[in-house]
Structures are given as C-alpha cells and as structure tokens.
Image 1 (cartoon, rainbow, N blue to C red):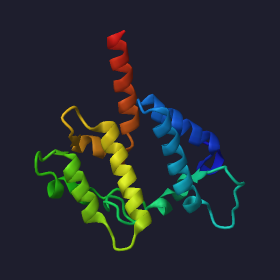
Image 2 (tube, helix red, strand yellow; image 1 turned 180 degrees about the vertical axis):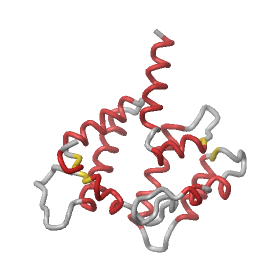
Image 3 (cartoon, rainbow, N blue to C red; image 1 turned 135 degrees about the vertical axis):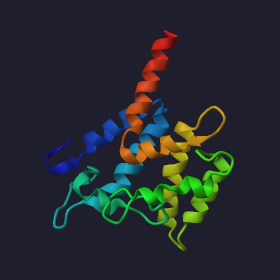
Image 4 (cartoon, rainbow, N blue to C red; image 1 turned 120 degrees about the vertical axis):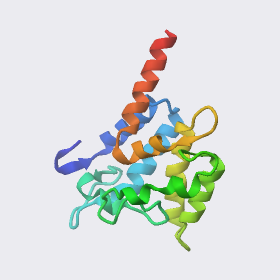
Length: 171
C-alpha cells in the first residue's frame, strides 16, 4: 500500500491476484479489481487532490465514503460495523437459520433496495452475488460465518488457506 493509506494501480493488480489466489478465474478476478477500484476510488479521494488518469487509487482512510445505498446497513455512515444490523440472516434465512439459499439471497437484495438507487442496486447485487458464487457450499448455501468473515476482513485469507490446503491434499 502506498503512503497515506492510498491503494494504487499496483494494489488493483494485487486485488486481481488475490481473487486468483482464492480460486476465481481470470475474467472474474480482472472484473472484480476494476469494479472495486473503479467504483471505490473516486469516492475516497481526499478533497483538493487529483489523481492521474487510470491510477484507480483507493484511499483507505476514506473508505467509509465508498458506502453505497441499497446495502445491508451493517456498516454505519462512518464505516463502523454495527453487529445488530448483521441480523440479516434472522430475517431472510428460512431454509436454515445459519445460511442463505440463492433464492433467499435474492429476497435480501430486493428487501434492501432503495427506490431509484440503481448504482446501489448494482453494488449490492454484485457484492452479494460474487460472494455467493465464490463461497456457497456444495448444497448451495452461503453460511452466516462466511458473510461475517467479509465484514471482519478474514474471508480472503481463510479462502486462500482452504485452497492451499485442498491443493496440498490432492498432490
């Protein structure tokens, strides 16, 4: 990470490499890096600062400014995790109390939509659908502890460790 909590183009490439490390294909990894850095970057740039074109920096100190509408509400406006709001599983997980099916995830996304917030709909849809695609189990369930790992920042490391472990056991 560059000085001042700024993620750079190099970090976008590392993000793509990170998606590859957890088992995502090249197209999803590249799209995720562009979508994440392209979507968050402009929102996090400090006032009175300009960035060169195509740099796509994300300023981590301003990451809370990247919050979009039509989300789960688990982060407050200042980017702090609100545990009470993480109870989305109580409301939407009906098949199993600790996991969401694809259909239940669709219902969660629909329930979180704010009127005419098309960018927020796209952001929420993309985030949750990629999470579901990458993390659902063999029976099609996205588990609560997996979603929680997104919010506490441990998911990617856990997925990479699982992938390495699976690779080692098949060698």
